[in-house]
Amino acid sequence: MNGDRFVYVTYIRATAEQLWTALTDPDFTARYWFGVRLESTWKEGAGWKMAYRDGRVTDLGEVLEVEKPHRLVLSWRHQWREDLKAEGEVRATFTLEPAGEMVKLTVVHESPRAPSKVIEAVSGGWPQILSSLKSLLETGAALPRPQPAPASAA
Image (tube, rainbow, N blue to C red; front, side, top):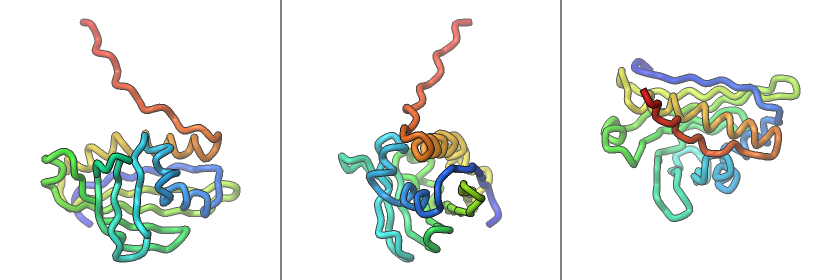
């Protein structure tokens, strides 16, 4: 896909099956995604959404490919910010590769547009989310929601 993309790679001490569950179970995702649940049947062609328990939807799309527990490809459309929603669909690919006692997780988020405001936004979000996921799987505790840095007094 030509355009803009963000790639994040991390190694997590878990099995591919544990990581797959962490990525696809709504109750588990809410634990490291700061209250947001990813919901779907995770079958090719099915819809998926990210939503708070009160029903507010943040993102949604379609499940494009499923190779449990190794690969998941989603079309992705942001729903909150109008400038991001206006860019239309982008694609997120999750690849899980066994690496000894760990799993190598690669997340690629791609847009056909360059530059893409969606890719700019996810490049700040994915490191926070995936660090929280890693912490939860390895220690049993997710990270707290990051707080904005205080304004400096110049």
